[in-house]
Image 1 (cartoon, rainbow, N blue to C red):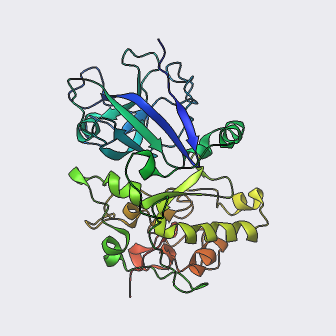
Image 2 (cartoon, helix red, strand yellow):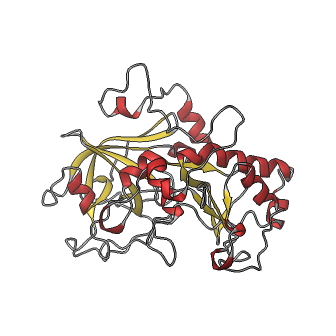
Image 3 (cartoon, rainbow, N blue to C red):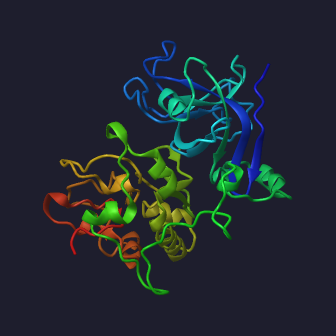
Length: 349
């Protein structure tokens, strides 16, 4: 019997309510090699918090009839144990479970996430509801239009049975760095990032998924953006940088006359990433990428530590980021120079 996935669209979010969750990966799952579709190995990282969803679009017969659209890896999924009402947010790291699995599970959790949510691995399954914030945008346009007719947008807190703040339907966004209307953002020093952006450090040298769920967001790019041969539908950044980055991208798009050809001539379609949790190269302090406040563009033509790079101080992308007070790595001296790199944190006061 095929697994039923009761997907609903509520505002910008996708919801799947009252379904079964199973667990996978790690040393206690002998039938699992640890390899995942996102590249994370659950045997190498047995304590990782993550999930797998049965998504269409991967041309895999076990999941292609799922109503869940293809989502980017590291999309955050909010999962609630229906028995205890405990909830956690975990990143999407794999494809599955199969729609024909005997468990009839509609989501797989890593063993650590399953335990943290209150599940007992020996039991194998538990009843959950899960929400994928902002994921409605990945549905085909006709399904979005159909789903949008007459559906009520409700808050995450209300949907999970917890009282929202009185007089408010949703949690407020974290305060940004802008001051008076029209003022440029005032970014913190690198040494102040934990205080300003929150501490992203989690267990066992990885990021804290709760921090990520509360602080990261997706900013769509108005032009077609690629990373290698893969289309990138949005840029993952800290919420405090989102409005500023949106202005930067829109200003660039306006300046080139909304011409994709001009974007490609300037190499602004060549994107090389934003949020990734790691220390600075040749250092122990966290990279600014770990906070979701740094972006890399066209690494091939703007190699790190090289004084020969495509982007220059008068390049459109550089001037538009600087208009928002972002720091450009091309201004750094000596071996620190990094012309592909833009960040929302100051090196010097």
